[in-house]
Structures are given as structure tokens and as C-alpha cells.
Image (tube, rainbow, N blue to C red; front, side, top):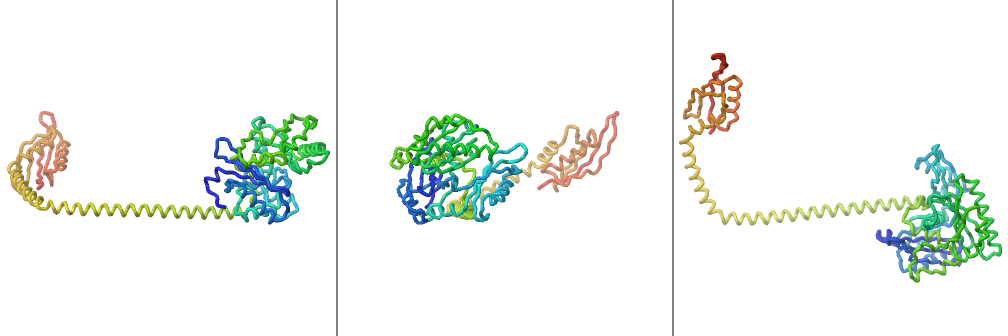
Length: 477
């Protein structure tokens, strides 16, 4: 099923598969408050792969929103193994390598046959990290993924239901995130106890309990006490401050005050759909809440946060990474081609405009050619008259230029000008530096060239310095 980027950010679908039922919850997260738009279930008549694929097809076919958007595959807690460990590092890369080595040691399977994830529940001041390892046989996930692929659906994330219940608890504003909260999720045929702290589960245990049994409340109480005892022995975390019972409404009806008061902390019953916005639609079947718990699925689809771990097989992650990389390469190539095409089109249009302008100028010049010829003749006559006028006043112009460039300390004694464009200047200055400055000023003038200081000497008259000079130069033009 093709998934558009717009829908992937707007629609979130969570699918949970047990041995008896397929559960589906869908939300529209593009609204200010996430709204549950579909709650569906389908009972499984058999356990074959074909039956599972047909069940998934039937479930999605009944949805109005056919595109699942961001699809989360949720694995029940009883199908995975959890192990609590302390690693001598806080570096994420080192923790990942340690988890990879430690995970196969916890179950009797080869490392190639398992899928694992982990989450850090505490970083200790001594540089150690307390983690929870989540381990499962990869055949479980691959079976579900194969059934989805037969219907052209691919999950974006694979999580466990304990992770979803953490998100559900965050939606309930009455509970503090920084204190330990026990959540008992009651479902058909089994229940699950999670200890949640700061948005993550630090302990989780699932156990079978049948709603139809006469000793349901007693069995449930025993399993809760057994879970709390194991929690205290396996972890050194904080003591929970309160407990929340949620799940199917039929199961909650069996929870009486005696059971709630028997726990060593404040305990309450909480409907799974409380504080949740449900769309008024035939897709949301409220009768499903009676016998089945959707709390973990609701938490998953109402949260925009990414999971702390993803149990998708590594080969599928690598395959999707390569596909995404190839897609980006194709997008980049198309983008480059579009840029080159745009530049080429702009250059072509620019050339055409220039050619059109040149043709227009040529036509205009041809029309003005006769007028230009007459103007050129008139310009030659004017130039000739002006040149004759310049010759008549050239001596005065040279004399004016000499006095323009001379400083106040320069006194001219002799000014000799000849028709061969030569000029001889004799005079005196108050110092030799003044003479040299006068020579430099003549050289910078556009009227004179080849300026030469033939001789200069300094003498004193009545105690005052005086420098005589003799300068020759040629006139430009």
C-alpha cells in the first residue's frame, strides 16, 4: 500500500495480534487533540498464516480510511522476554554493543534467530547504566510482517504493549510522571502489570487470568503480589506511589474495594477510554471496550513520540534504509535535471531576446545612417575649428598650467616657450625640497612630459636659504 507523506503525519494506526484476536485502533493526529477514528477487532478462527492474512485483509477492508499512514505493529508482552541488566557504560554505541552480546545469553536461541531492543531506565553516577533488554524470536515478527505484506502493508515500527501503556498513562493528567505508577491492564484471557516511571516502563510482567473463572479476583490478587515481589527482587527502583487498574469494562467490574485496599498504595479503577477523544462514527465500536483492552493501542496512536526501541528485523531496516537512500538519490537527480533545464531555458530566452534587440538596433541604425553621416561631417568641421582656436591660445594655456601646478614658494624668473613644444623654466624656491615638489607636479600634469631638472643649487641671502633651478620639459600633443 503506497503511503503519502501527508497521510503518514496525519494518520496513525496500531495493530495488535494475539492468538485469539486482532485489535486495531486508528487516530487522526493532525488535530489539536488526537481523535480516535476507528476501534476494530476480529476474532481468529484458526492459527494458520493464511487465516491471519485473511483476517488482516478483512479488518483493513472495513475501514473508511484505507491508508494506515504510520503503522505500528504491537506485540503482546507475553510473547517477549525481558531482562534487567547493569552495563559499565553510558555511551549509546557501547550500550548497543553490550546489549547485542548479552541478549542471546538470556534465551535458548542463536543470536541470528532473535530480535532485541533495549531502553535505558537509569544512568548511575558511577558511570553504569541500568537497562531493560527486550528479546523475542524473530519468527514471531516475521510471521506478522509476512501477513501484512500479503496485503501490501508495511509496519513502520514494532513495539510491545508495555510501551503503549506508558503513552496511555501520559494522557491521564491525574498521575505524576516522576513518581512510580503501577498499571494493571486487564484483557481477555490475560493481564499485564507494568511499573511506569517518567514515561517508560521499568518493570513488566504478563500472566494468564480468565474472566470466566470463579476465582478471578483471587487469582488476579496472587499474580499482582507475585509481580510486586519479583519487581522488588529484580530491580532496585523506587517504590510505586499508586496503582491504576484499566482494561475491559467487564474485567474492571470484577475489581472490588477489597482488592484495591489490599495493595500497599493508593489504587483506583480507570476506564481505558477516559480522557480520550472518540469520534462519533460507526468505525468506533464502543461494545469492543467491554471484553477487550485497547489501552496500549490508544496510547500508541495518540502519541507523536518515537518509540525508545524498534523491534523491526535489522535486515528489513537495512533494506528500507537502502530504498530510502535510492529514493533520495532519484529525487536529487530529478531536482538537478529540473535546475539544468530551467537554466538552459533562461539562457535560451536571454539569447533570443538579445538577438531580437540586435535586429531592432540594426534596423534603427540603418534608418539613422544618413543622419549620422551628416553629423560626422559637421563634427569634423567643428573639431578643425576648435583645433585652430586651441593653437592661437596655446602659449597662454601652457603658462596657465605652469602657474596652476606651482606652489607659493616658487618664483619664476624666466619662461621660454618655442614652437617645437619645448619649455624652459628658470626661477628660485625657498628650499631644494620645494624645487623637487615643483618637478613632481610638472610630471603629474597632463600637459608636460620629459621633465628634467638641469641644475639646482642652494645659497643664502641675508641668512635665508634660497634655491635656484633650471627645468626643461616637452609639451604633450
